[in-house]
Structures are given as C-alpha cells and as structure tokens.
Image (cartoon, rainbow, N blue to C red; front, side, top):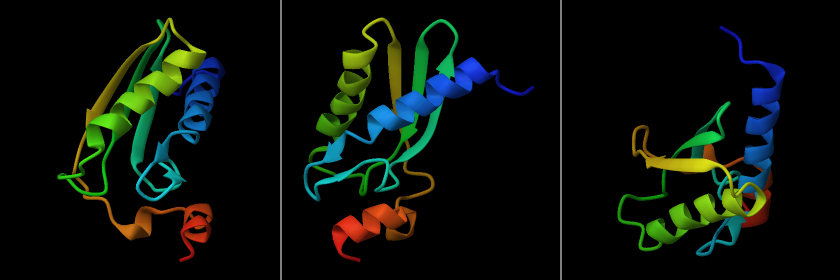
Length: 106
C-alpha cells in the first residue's frame, strides 16, 4: 500500500529537521553522515526513527539520540518520537553522502 502524500511530506520534513542535528565529534549532520536509516511518520503524530552510530561504543551516542528527539520536538512538540538504534548493517564511511564527504574533506 502506497503512503499518502501528507505522510510523505511529514517524513520529508522530519528528514530536513534531522539535517540540523550535528555529530559534535566531526561537525557534520547525522543525515549526511548516513546515520539515519529510516524515518516513519504515523498519522497520529507518532514518529519512528531507525538510526545507527559510527560505532556501538560511541561516547556521545546518548546525546545524539536525545538531540534527534529534541530537534523534532522543537518543531512539533505534539509528536511522540521513538528512536531505535541498530548496528545492522554496521555504519561505514561509504554511507556518507557526497555533501558529507565534501564537508569532511574526503
């Protein structure tokens, strides 16, 4: 079943919000780093984010996850945001967008 346009628009908006969440260790946003795997919006204002970290032992992982929730809540305080971390597939530098590679000087 195809998602309706309103849901697609909400998901696109959330992706855009996440472009302002930075990984403070490298000062590049988490979308261009390839850390966001999936964004799903459900009509009642529920948002599910599936993401990873560059390493399971990332010392600032909790802060990044909290920043994801807070970034969405600033724009949409009524949304319920659930962030799930996964390490399957594990993150690799190939997941970085072209823009991210330019920002990192790669």
